[in-house]
Length: 620
Image (cartoon, rainbow, N blue to C red; front, side, top):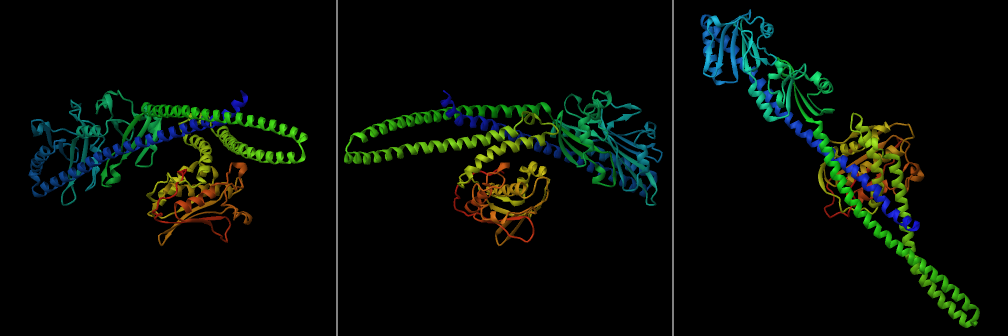
């Protein structure tokens, strides 16, 4: 039983380690891809809302400047009839622009001189006795100080007439400008009341989960039952700084016009609307357009990915366990046959030995000769399955120990569950340790330069370099080395990005592992240039370099100076095979007078057209 168990375990145990590890990695990759899709969708939604608001603001500022110029023109023609002339124009203007609810001409003391109201039955001019004193309203003070050619936009608030809020509530933006005569004297303050209800409805259609808050975090528009404006008055919704302080802190302190972040309440996207930055002649408040993907939806996304990959991993594990059990059974049968042959050989040797003492010398010689031929034949037949069995057992044993060591040193359940503020560091440690086990298996396959899965594509080298640096981000950050990139931004190749990325990753990994002593930091440069349709890609470090005795052997397989730290000695050998067999170029070490190591890869910008020998997918 113990012998059977010892034969079965090397076949089955590697799959029980590798398949769960791969399931975890693939699950995290899918979750990352799904989150990226959410990020992009939210960014598009933010862009649509931003366009709506900015277009509305541009329209408002252009209209108020037109209204102010009309007032100045009417004043210049005849000051006595300027109000009537302006009112006649504004009657047509309001009729043509139904989004405006009112137009006012105030004097310097903020008393109404002319007011026109847009109602369902038409535009009406207020009678003299209906004109109001607006000196106590919040928009009076900025209106009295505006310089020529400047305009101001007020905060969004409900429309108020005669000290009472107009029902139904009209979310109102007031755009203000001062009109001046030819002598530069102010002749009045022009105000347009813009009913922002249509704008808020358009925002809701563009992004059902979108929201709008002012610079103090007060809701101007929100999805769901809060509606457009009612919550501004009755206090049913707390301002964002009180309702979700963590989210407001992220929104308010963001320096960029657009940002995305994940908090306990979900994925948030925020875009700053600052009209004064777009048009310096406009004084306007700052707003934030927000959108939220609830935490429950993100959790459901993660759960779905976990369940799907767990199901696939379970099926694969069952199938591979069944196949491995069949192989172990066959191995046991071979072992039994080998033992039977060994016993038969021992019995035959004993029989021959007894015959040797009872035969004559000639007969004994002939028998011994025949026996030698027979033994040689049996030994040949026995040694072949025994040698193959021992090679398979040694290889399985070596792979098992490497996988078990990587699993023991790297995988921790706490790292896998953590997806909070420090999830990136924990995920980097988890990913590095899991990938180490997978890379060891793929590297042994890559020695044969199997390029069946290599995919040809047209790509930008600078983007590929950035992808490799992103994959190695955790390793490079922990090393403390400075990475300098000198790659033309528009350098395009028609080649195999996977093998090229694998070469660059291996060269960077060698520089980090071998070039510097423990605790020492340095500078690693990545340089690229194109000469006559040939790309020269160099990885240069300022470390201790390669000893002269080792320079000719570094390209050989299994030659490494870092075996104690997990080095396999296959990295540069794989690079050499990929460079020549896949990319149609070559790689070499460049002797320089400066300290360090200079590895130079030279390949054509357009890879050979013939079908390449198969190469395993690169780690990038």
